Amino acid sequence: MDGFSYEFEFGFRTNCGGLDSFTTQGEDDLKLEVLDGLLDDIDEVDDFHAANDLSTVCDDFLLDIEFTEKVAKFDCGPVEGSHLGNSSSESHSPGASGSNVAVGMSDSSITALESECKNDSLEKMVNCELHGTFKSKCEYQAPDMEKCPSSHDMDRFDELDSDDNVLLSSILSKCKKRVKSTVLGTKVKRLRKPTKRYIEESSDLKPGSLMRGQNVSTATLKDKHPKVTPCNGSSKGSQVASESWLRGGRLKKRSPILGFESDDDIFSSDSDDDRVRKRKSKIDDRRKNQRMWTLSEVMKLIDGISQFGVGKWTDIKRLLFSSSSHRTPIDLRDKWRNLLRASYAHQKNKGEVDPKHAMRSLPKPVLCRIRELATIHPYPRVPYSKKCNGDTDSSRHPIKAKSAPFSSHGRNLRTTIKEQ
DNA sequence: TTTAGGG
DNA sequence: CCCTAAA
Image (cartoon, rainbow, N blue to C red; front, side):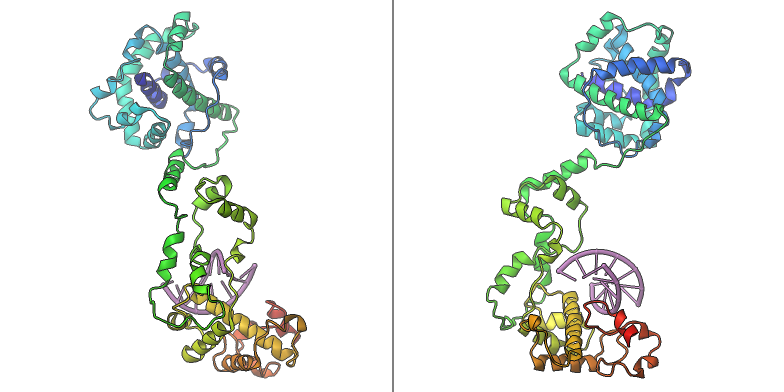
């Protein structure tokens, strides 16, 4: 049973070194045809995923196939007794650590086997072993290669377990695919798909943990300094409570698994809401964590900046925003950038506020404060104060002159300096 | 790790 | 808000 699978697999593997000597090139086509015919009856078993890094074997493909055919013939022949059901043969060789891998012969074990076969030593070892068992038989039978498999052989083939057949089918279909690509000269390099083992490992996460990957830990990680700060007087009473789910799941890095997750819904343990939400806003989900800045937050930010200076975002975060687990230092910086932009826009409009944005505009004192701070702590690489723009200040900072202050045109900062 | 800058 | 490069 398994012995057949095992030996077949290893025969396939090791043929490259052992059996190519007695096959003439002229037989290749014939054999391929025969093999193809054989294989056509077999359902294509889905990929072996172990296709990764089989390229080293690929060069010996034709030979592999030859041997495959031989095995199909020989192993069912009279001598097959020593093959079929003789899985103990591997136990003869104590050094054959790899043999253990193949005995179970599940798909995953095949995967394991294949990956193990990348190991040179293992291959050699198996070579040795098989030269003892296989080669002699095969060489012995080689002269009869031309003849078709006898009906007896085919019967024996049919006698195989269904499990064995499945396995055999898998292996053969794999051979077939590779042979086709190789023989046709295309030698298509298959895209590196995730190995079955990888998928299995991924899906193993599913049952136990509802925590979707990394989402859980980051939330707690941020409040390293749970300094008790009155919840910034924000009108949003629910802010602190809700931010755990809103922001707690902020993904610092996209994990490679994310590809699966979005494509196949491997993590089907998601609630329906989650799934719907994920589908709906896959594109702009970067915005879904967005949080309106409250005035009090802005004030705190301004205070922090005036206290620590611009650029000390971590300090500001630690001391003033420790209670809000969202608002990373980067957020603070971004907000400050936006505030500067806004203040500049405001100033440029001579105090007139676009009625459309009137609601969002900052109170005048805050605006003044921002402008004030901007002069004291110019935002990085802002060479001159916004207030004195247009004068020759920029000439004093020739290096930094290229980075323009914030313009009223959204984020296009550079056009402004050209205009001036 | 933090910051700056771009998107 | 996110990502990445640079420090």
